[in-house]
Amino acid sequence: MTTAKNPIIAGFYPDPSICGVGEDYYLVNSTFSYFPGIPIMHSKDLVHWEQIGNVLDRPSQLPLEKGQHSQGIFAPAIRYHEGVFYVICTNETSGGNFIVTAEDPAGPWSEPSYLEGADGIDPTIFFDEDGKVYYIGTHPIVEGRQYDGECHIWIQELDLTNKKLVGEPKDVWSGSMRFVHWPEGPHLYRRDGYYYMLLAEGGTERNHSVTMCRSRSIWGPYENHFCNPILTHRHLGKDYPVQCVGHGDLVETPSGDWYMVMLAMRPIDGYTTLGRETFLARVVWENGWPVVNPGVGRLTEEVEVNLKEWKPERQATVDKRAYHFGEMDRLGYEFVYLRNPEQNRYRLCPGKGLKLQYSTYTLMENTSPTFVGIRQQHHCFRADTVVYADSISRGQETGIVLLQSNAYYLRTALTRGTDEEMILSVYLCQDLEEKLIAEQVLADVREELTISLEVRGLAAGVKVTCGKTETDVAQEIAIHSLSTEIAGGFVGCTVGMYAISAEETEKGAIYKDFIYQTTKCC
Ligand code: 6LW
View (cartoon, protein in one colour):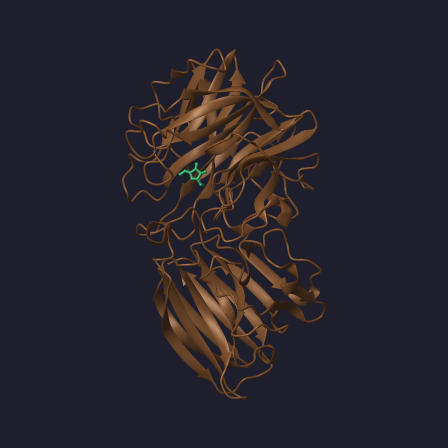
């Protein structure tokens, strides 16, 4: 037995899908307008997870140009069949539903095959025992729709050799309850002669849920499970610490135990800055239907997993990440950029640091500003960056940013005043409007400066250190607007560094270190 701690993957890791291959488990998540797309995690015990790559790591696989922050990659599903891994998902910015394949889940993954005729979102693949393969997805009802979010789950046969839908599509299910919103995120499983369909209902917010139906034939009719939803937290009230539980996927271990991964949120005082995270639950089958966390019926902080403990080399969620860029020959898989970054704007300079070439694109645009970061994984954390002062000239600005979207972020901006002086400003952007929160003139500038962002739940503070002098620049900045509840969208915050300049230049801000660590929460 091993004990998992929920969330099993903390921070912005929504819409989890999982598959098991022997003793190995692989898990993928949505990434929207971040690049690379779809982190792929590996585990042998469902408790410890290690990122082994990104499914979409080439621009040719992931056109994101001009897409809105919460467009791009929606809800991938991962499946394995006869030596091949399949990921199927939607690019809401460009191209729609597509499949990529790989023999090694760490990559390389193929170019996308876009599926003509596959409308809607949240596709998954099902391999039947007779060798047939099916596409299952959700699409809104267009004609005769009675309300927004009225959708059908639909199925069509898939010719995997030619990556084409074949035969006729059929709408097979529209959710377990009358007038239900957003029946979506379906996955299909075969068990004891039934086709079981797991899906999400109620929308990804507070009414989210996991439901199930089943049929003897893949084409239906599907029978509702009268105990639906099999998992939700919507009846627990707004103050329950874990909310929005839904969008699950099931996996069976070699010894016949079942587990479910799903997304959930952890708001603080009603605001969620971490986005939707990946959680785990135990599942048992009773009378032909699954029971989630028997005896409890909701998500728990800990989950006993009936697998041998396994220790990955690098864990997906860690309390401290220290990057000394001058000593690194590549950035880890956890680093993300916005949309389609020009890779030559990001250079690791041996012995020195990470050079971020200034760009004229600001963080507010739906372009690819110079930005690189990692996900915020803890409610309370501190991020310190060490930057070389001489890499910042007049007209250029750089610093740490806590980014919810292009419309909502908190950034520190280091700029040059006179030759000796520098200025550290703090801006909060809300609804595409930047407000100056604080400004500090730094007279005694040395070779290196440390900019520190400290987040405690819904408040942030900024400090700057030059030599031995540490200065508080801002304290108790209210950042509750960097939340799903106010900023909206499907994302959580990332924290990283950016570089903006008034004019095009070859120059870049050079960062020596970036240290992210969790701190004691209040
Ligand atoms: C996902 C869908 C959803 O594709 O959010 O609200 C989308 N529902 O299931 C993005 O995560």
